[in-house]
Image (cartoon, protein in one colour):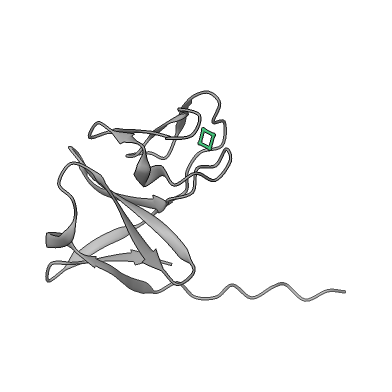
Amino acid sequence: MSQPTAQKPKRWQYLIDVASLEPNDATPVELGNRVMAVYDTNEGIFVSDARCTHAGANLCDGYFDGKYIECPLHQGLFDATTGKAVAAPVTRNLRLYENRTVDGKLQILV
Ligand code: FES
């Protein structure tokens, strides 16, 4: 009988000072060997991996209107506030990370 795989406990990870975010835009932030996308939306801050779920383009290079991020490679569209893939060719949603701001520092739960 196999043992259940133990889940690593999640922890809050510092990402960027909120004052350093590009207002009403998607800011790329390196986290280890990954790049995260931090969206300053009309509804608050949301964070996802910056890689498009279609073919891996950096979403931070795409067009952002305050809610929707358009991929720069094939123009797939995501709702940055939910991660939902809303226009072809993207079909897989973005994973959003829980985030919080402590003393002006943005943290995500990883
Ligand atoms: S890589 Fe983003 S839509 Fe193709």
